[in-house]
Length: 254
Image 1 (cartoon, rainbow, N blue to C red):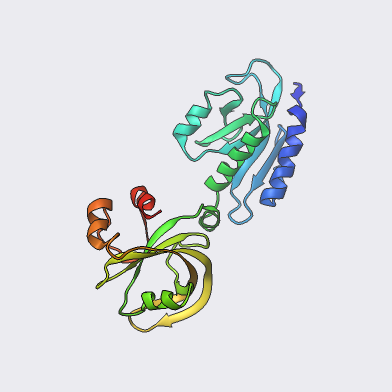
Image 2: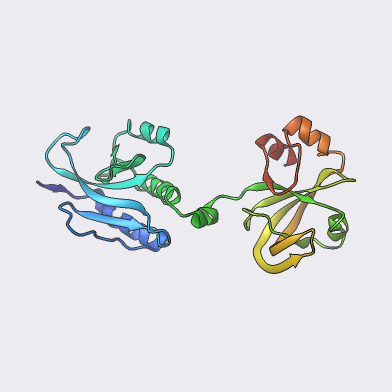
């Protein structure tokens, strides 16, 4: 059975790309009859890419030769089904689990697109901690209680302050500060510039093991995003802790 060499040395490009971006080297499981190279996450050891020889007699392929394919995990099964309708994409091989696709490395699929599916697979198979680090910046609404901290006075003096770090918030995120009664409105837009700053606080009312640093970006009039408006127009009826915001509110806050 003849082997079709990957087009324009794309196989070597894939190896170099994975080593440079994800800092992992291929593993070669024993007792495999086919050419086989697995790439795994360094923390959870889950496989995110698999290079293998696929017989071309499989559905969608026409002869007895083999072609080198890159198996990747696609998190959305419906989208995976759509990709299977395109030339160069096949059901994963020899991986038999749901959501795995094989991409032919014969030049049919551009190298840049292959890299994008590698990234999709890397994220889909990553540990919870890695996914947290990789996720794109997010927007949050966080509460400020004047009873415990006068954030209005703080921003009159400083452009950057420390704040109790909310669960899930990371550097680069945007936080909109909702100041509780008697203000009861979103007053500030801030960027998170640093997280995980060691700090221990437990006064019976507020507890914290770490804090974050936030930088003021924008101020809002106290009558613009009031408690009533947040409920009636955007479906936010309480801000008791960090929470995501709907797109409609995100657009309005911009």
